[in-house]
Length: 454
Image 1 (cartoon, rainbow, N blue to C red):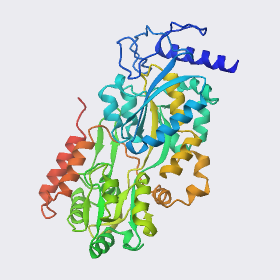
Image 2 (image 1 turned 90 degrees about the vertical axis):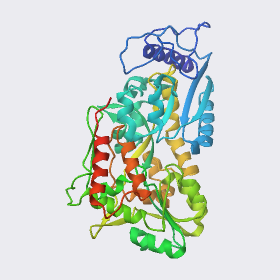
Image 3 (image 1 turned 45 degrees about the vertical axis):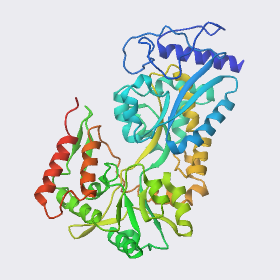
Image 4 (image 1 turned 180 degrees about the horizontal axis):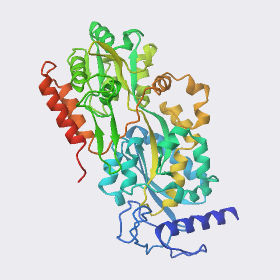
């Protein structure tokens, strides 16, 4: 009886979301959507756009195969296969065809918004992308589709209460929840080899570079990325903000409330990048450089914990970001701090089951597995309270930054100009002695970041 009720609910929910209503009885002629979500023009399943289009396809019954596409990070592929297998076992009365693809959380928004209807039914993304994804209609409103969670014997309120309040708030836009919290450590900190770098050395960029140079080693940092290099500006008191129209506010070419100028910040960054012990890293290439053994310290996140631990061995250590010398002062870098989410594509033809899958991938058991296998920091309160999580070196480091980390609110125009600025700093294309040239570069950056959307 319970299975029949679940089947009926799934049919009704999918029908409502697709704009059509079907009965709950057996109907062998009902058809399911395809697994690549290509739109037929009248089967969008869009709960955001209000386009008024209606589906001619009736929802899949439990006797049919539910086809879903799931996107996750490359380093998560084996884990996702394991979790999907558990999901299928948990719902063994339903046939599934779940295709797993590779898409980094950091680039998910850009890929999804290229063609939302062709994007995955379920995908992981960084929390700073949620505003743009919601605005584009790329995420299902969980307050509307959450009834599907009864297929997993829970409600959306259960999801909210199981996770940290800040994570739930970050997954909420205009009072509506649009994603399931997956990880609470989406930030970066300093890993170091304690056999080369002392705890005192690790507190400042000056100490790091001096110790690394003495040992013939390097300190790795991703300068050509607005997610990483913003930590210098945020630490100096500069800001970014997101306007209602999706444009970005930015003051980096002026003077911060702390009395520092943007030119002074860039001069400090140039001094660091120009040191022979500094190694600029390409975004996403941290693991390979760490594995090379050339780095005695690196700024990265929990996703690289296993690699760093393997390379540094008994010297494995981690701490907050270092301070940097700014106009004669030691200033604490302030990292962009956020979360990782799993969202449901509003255009999914099986949005009910997609919702249940997204919930499963982020539930307590899955977050525990993610921590055990990849040392990813959870948002689930029960997992956060375990001795294993509390004792974890990497998670302790990222947690130590929560008081001064910055929730990075920016629009899509932010990334390219700031990456270009960072690249020019890393490659020495700006001179610390040329204040006018630095000011011009900052003005160009701010102009590009704050430009109106097309």
